[in-house]
Image (cartoon, rainbow, N blue to C red; front, side):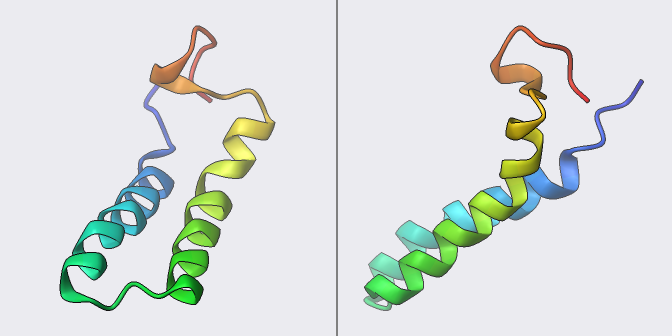
Length: 62
């Protein structure tokens, strides 16, 4: 069975990639950081709440 969480993982990865890029450009304000944290939380939260940790833990991916 294929891991179906790659779209949400991609959203989280892009949001995390934005932190150093925006900081380097001098555009990372606190509200922007909060939006990026919100994106990561919304994209990974449901899987973590369901116990689907995938490669990070010992439980099988959902």
